[in-house]
Length: 118
Image (cartoon, rainbow, N blue to C red; front, side, top):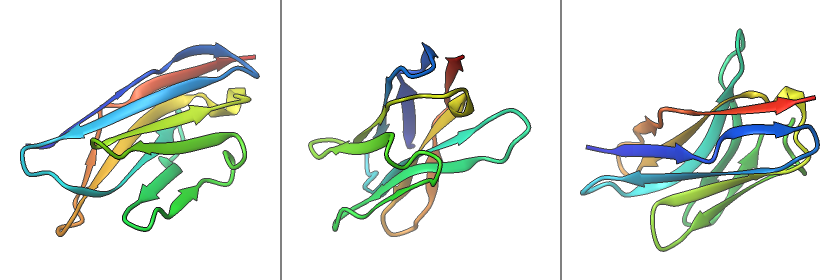
């Protein structure tokens, strides 16, 4: 069984910063990619950032480029999302994803709320 758990969400003022964390665990779980997606009320879930390995390729959604940074803890299945210069448009539930090597199956966390007050 694979478990994906996010943490670090909360309320922040516009222009502020937050750091999200995500860890994926499972007895035989070996991910080849982990990332962040978000979903605002009434909107589709969208890509925020995705990191693949080996090779280290990284994708960012257009709306967060230059403000958000995804990073990985190589010692465990853990990633972070550093979010700077936040705006009200960043308010959403942020979901962590973890893609399993071999099957490519994507696992999701339960989500963490980020609210940016203007």
